[in-house]
Structure formats: structure tokens, C-alpha cells
Length: 141
Image 1 (tube, rainbow, N blue to C red):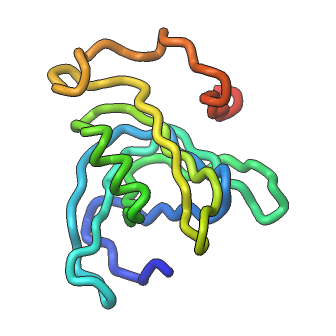
Image 2 (cartoon, one colour):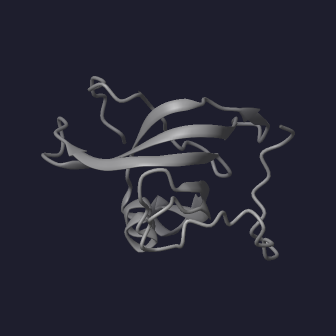
């Protein structure tokens, strides 16, 4: 369970609640904060460009946009560590479903690397075709 905390200035809290909840976001940074249950809870700060949230009936609804903070689960932390995101990198983060012991599984796809990112060359990745199963639709723009 995610503890209730007071906002510390970046943005509202975004919570992945149902499988297929997803965000298209610009990476801002990562930090740690003290909560009632953890002395150093990892937080992901993003600027959400577009998001989809799935209700309890499976309907996809437009979610929030703008500055948000997300508590990192172990799965999210591992994906972010591997991706080496830098400020202004764009990515999709999708709640894929539940694994063993209700562990939340996530998928991460980098869409565009910022200029100067050592993990990329600053070239937009929009022209790279998605492989089967990689498509994460967000609806009409």
C-alpha cells in the first residue's frame, strides 16, 4: 500500500492501479523522501504528456497530465536503473499486470532520448517501428 504523504512541491501523486494503466511522459528526475513507513522511499518525477487509466470495468479513460510524482516499486526501479533516463527523455511506462505474490509487472519503452544522453544520441526514436506486442495505444490526439 502506498502511504499518504504531503506534496513537497513537484506535482500530484500518480498511482498505477489497474493493469494497462500507462503514461507517456518526459523524465524530470528521481529522488528519495521520508514517509511514515520508509526512511528513503524512491520517487520518480515526470511531466505526463498523456496518460490512460483503466477503470474496474476495463474501460480506458484519459488520465491526468502535467507534473506528477510516482512511488517507485522494485520493478519500476529496476527498469529505470537499466534505462539510464536523463532529464527530458520521453518514455512510456505501462502497468502490465500482476506476477507472483501480487507483484506489479511494468513495461518501459524509451521513445526519445534527450540531446547529450549517454544512453542515446539525442535522435528521436519515433521513426523506429514498434515490434509486435510493443504497441501501447493512447487513442486519438
